[in-house]
Length: 434
Image 1 (cartoon, helix red, strand yellow):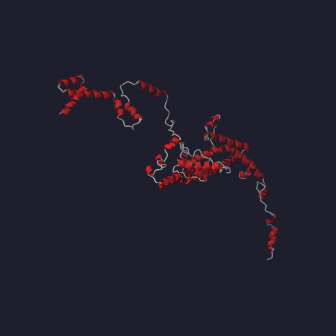
Image 2 (cartoon, rainbow, N blue to C red):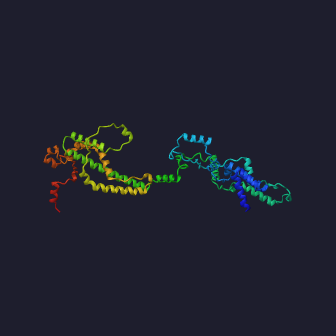
Image 3 (tube, rainbow, N blue to C red):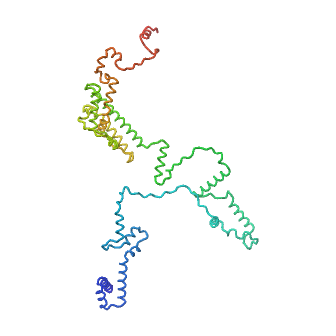
């Protein structure tokens, strides 16, 4: 009951104001109780005024700077502080960078080279000496009773101290810096004796500056260097070479077949050589409009606009249908190689799959500008042979020339005299006596 009355009195003092205090005084509480209640009121008021300081003092030592700043900040009163206003204006003055353009934390470089220990002054060496002065106390005394040592014990002490300063008794260092200092000391002694004067000069050691770079993965870098020195390649590199070789062979054959077919089809329509070449150039212009080759922006800016060409590019559905089975099988084989390559290759080196329609469009766009030159070369190299022997030159060729091979540029290889076999040799073999 006393505790409940005390809580009710505190609530009246906190929320009632002056009327609550007057009610407490009229209730006839003792002076001690009133003093204790008023002290609680004063403490609560002081804590409410300095709530930020009490909160910051109650934080643990592991709390961060941001947490401490939030804890010590003043509560919102409805009006913005001048310092907060100035800070907001400074933040809004410049647009913040995108997350991708912000700088990343760069760790400080770490020097991994071996370093010698700092030199110590004579005073430091004396202060950290192993043999203290107490070891030598009384060794020069003449009276045994004065120092408590006999002559044999003194001699044993002297012998032990002398052995400590001998070269063979020196202990080897057990640290990296100690071993480096010992090696440098021996090298300097050898240089002083002149052992490095007549050493032949050889090729300098090539030091790789990136081997001890703290900003790269040294393990991966060293493994890559080992693979390069051994002339080895990862499995996905070999698979990539196989894929590139197969794709290059397929594209080269596809372009060669289509170029030869287009040249034959245009030439079979008749006309002079200039008309055939002009017809091929018209097809090339139409191909450039309907199926342009992907160019860089710099090249596109330099190309002038040309008037729209009326016409359709050259296509042959019969040829595509006849070659469809071979093309489909080859593209499937290329996709199989690409799939096995992508399973082994890293993400940055993976390749897309091949599509027959995309390969045909690329072939048409690449071959169209070269058809006119192909027609001219075929005409210069022999129209009768390239067009199946139906041209003007084939009509002028006689039967004997065709049989003898004079109509075409055919090379006949003649064997040596001792290897020739004719009528004379046959007659000799027939009448040869066994």
